[in-house]
Amino acid sequence: PTTALPTLPTPTFPTTALPTSPSPSTTALPTLPCKLTLDTDVTVDGGQPGFKVTVRCSKTVHESTLSFKGPAGSKRFKKKNFGDIKPGVNWRLFVQTVATFRGYMITFSGTIAGHEASVSKRLTRSTTRPTVRPPLST
Image 1 (cartoon, rainbow, N blue to C red):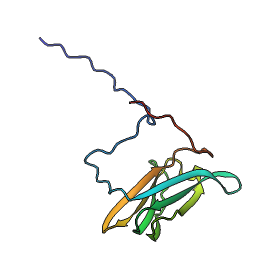
Image 2 (tube, one colour; image 1 turned 180 degrees about the horizontal axis):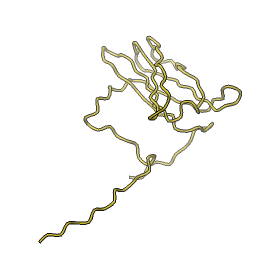
Image 3 (tube, helix red, strand yellow; image 1 turned 45 degrees about the vertical axis):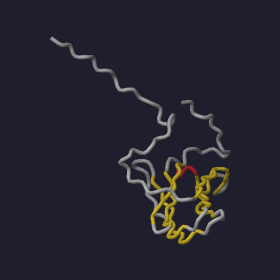
């Protein structure tokens, strides 16, 4: 007779330890030739911690939009339309309080050479200074 192996508990990992990599089946848009920045060194509304979203592209992006995807159960916000974004310029797209958008994935999308593409960043902290993190060990 064979003996069944004992069932081991499923390990749990900290959610911030490793960046998640998209699975091959993900239908993510190609990446835009743009740098999306979430700057938390901003104060808004009478002293509250804020952030600003800026983008700088190396090529013209047509029909550009900024969209917001929050954690489950969070408030939904309409995307913002910006039209054509010219290259080589820092564009300030959005300024808001950190508390309202903490945990949201902020995505800049548009069309380049006839193809849709995007670049995204998550607003994770309410720090007023940029956070320096040590490199992940492999």
